Structures are given as C-alpha cells and as structure tokens.
Length: 314
Image (cartoon, rainbow, N blue to C red):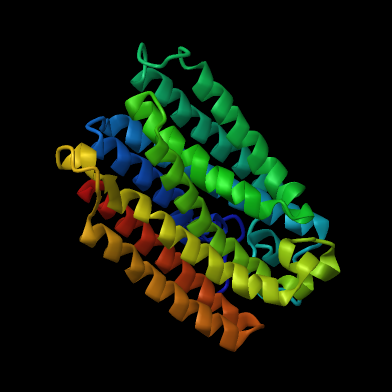
C-alpha cells in the first residue's frame, strides 16, 4: 500500500471500514421489506434509519480502532486488516474528534426521525430517544469493555438484529409484530457469523491480550461449528415466512400452505455459507482467514436480499 498522508480523507475512509457497512444495511433492508409487505412503507423514515445505522457502525469502528490502540491490543502480530491509529494514519486526538462528530451526526439523523414520525408514535417519540441513547452507550461499551468479556455475540444479536430491524419497522408501522421478531433474529444470527470469523482468526492474539471471546473461552472447535450452526439456524428460521395457516389463505381447509419459492430461496444462502465454512476449516488459522471475512460479508448481503424477497413474496 502506498504511503497514506496522516489524517487525510483516504486515511479516514480506511478507518471507517466501509466493507463492514453490510451489517448496518441488512437489518434496515429487512425492516423496510416487512413494512412494505404490510403496506406501511415510509421512504423518509427508512432512509433516516439507514443513515443512522451506517453512522453508528462507522462510529463503532472508530471507537474500536482508538481503544484497541490505546489498550495495546493492535500488536505487530495482528492478523486482521491494518488499523488507522496503530499505523499512524490518524492521530488519537483526531480520532477522538472523529468519533464525536460521527456520533453527533448520527444523533442528528435520529432527531430527523422524530420529525418524520411526529404525531404518530405511541409514546410521543420518547421511545426513539431512549433507543438512540441505548445505541450510543453500547457502541462505546461494546468496543471498550463488553467485547473483551465475551458478550460480543449476544450484543450482535441485539444491535444488528432486534434493535435495527425492529426500530426500522416501528418508525414506519408504529408497532411490532411476530414477523419482525423472527426477522430480527435471522438478521442477528447471520451478522454474528462475521464476528465469529473475526474472533476465530484472532483467537490466539485475543488470548494474549486478555480478550475473552467465546472462542478463547471454549476453544477453536466451538468457533468452527458455531459458524456453521448460526447460518443453518438462520436459514431454518426463514421457513416462518414460507409457511402460512391454510385456514387464513384458502378458506377453512385448516391445512398448512407452503410457498415453494420462499422455502427454496434461503437455501441458496445456506449453500454459499457451507462452502465458505469448508474453506474456513481448511485454512484454520493465519491471515488467509481474511478472505473468509470477505466471503462471509458477501453471504450476509445475499441472505439480506433473499430474506427480503421471501418477505415480499409471502
């Protein structure tokens, strides 16, 4: 890589880690698809949710970059992509300002949701204020404390599943349904596969740094099979949208009706997921696992698109 000027736009783009924005886009896409299927789509609210989610993802990346540098976690034996502070591309002081600005702009976007939903929210918008504060607080807690104690996977389910999918649907339909809860779980499980790969790759370095992820706690085999299991569980959960009670759809037959297309579509993701898992098992360790990160991100996007297609088709 050519020399990068300190605090330059190029440096900030690298620090933002745009490839990770897949994790922010998928739940918003899912929540919006649910709203569209229910005839509740509101374009401005959906756009603001997308901007808020992407802004908070970038802020979390900045916080992680700075904190790992200050803590000394980014050592010379780091296997993952290079970090901006550790490489000297961005100074710690500039990164602190970047974090503040990104969080501020994200919150400003969130305030736009209050305007877009004015007069429609059951609790007059206070629920959105609390949810926004919740996201900001845990963006800091996750990257600075909780991920080091093995809480990362649970928080991914919350903040890449239930919060963004449910929040995106809520600001358009002003309620939460069973479909939203199931879709939230699918989104969270699929996104967690990316964290699993990251922790699987870094398991030896994390152990030396005192970062007690689930894989550090319970060993390498857990990482391999948890990755596979999460993708399988997410795929099976999509059957919720493919199965409907026949009494509701075909008169009073009382039989289950299957949408064949909706049943088969998610298994395209599963095929890709299993293929990536096999490659992960073959590589096992080292920097070559970074290619698995890229494949997993691609698979996540594929599932997001397929799930949205299933929701809209059923």
